[in-house]
Image 1 (cartoon, one colour):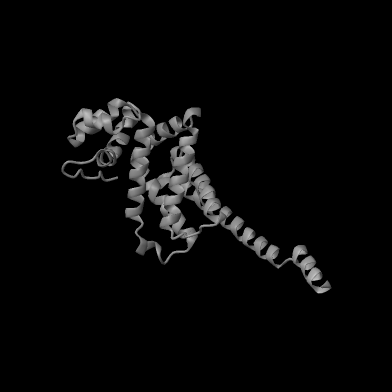
Image 2 (tube, rainbow, N blue to C red):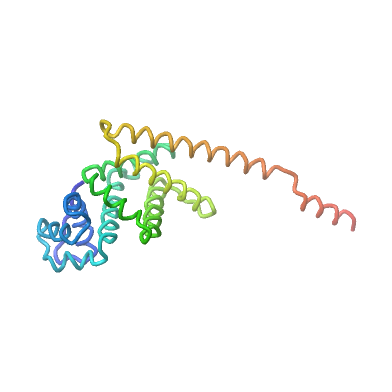
Length: 222
């Protein structure tokens, strides 16, 4: 994944975003540690004190910044005009696969990151990151739901994405073919669920309403 260029006199957020892919690359050898940050700063020409300040939250701060850079890489690889003509399932598959492509050069770092996020003290933060990734993907796919579907869609997609990442870090097949097949099966399962849910909702709306029936009786008796 290409590194984000630093502008003149960058803010800490800009430093964090620019260094994140380099930190991830170094985390494969140094772990998600201060050493990885300092090496990334050296590679990008950023003073050690500034690099440390950008990631003062420790390992989880580094991982969050990396995932933010993955969001950016995904959106660059999947512009709106490219997604516009696709079906929903195709959009979601393409968005997740774009994330995997961006993550692939630092697969060992991803493995270490998932291990850190699985720690009890980080579970809530991991869930928030999964939700955020799902939200970014649904918005890129054109979702505008504001009712309960807004939440169910993101919950389902966060589950698919998390499961796919776990398959991805252990996948040694060529071009991660096993992971892509795994993803396709999970998306098919969700699409079948959504279709069944839509059918159930339509049937529920068509059922006679006891409240409406009693109401009609009450008004009829007046």
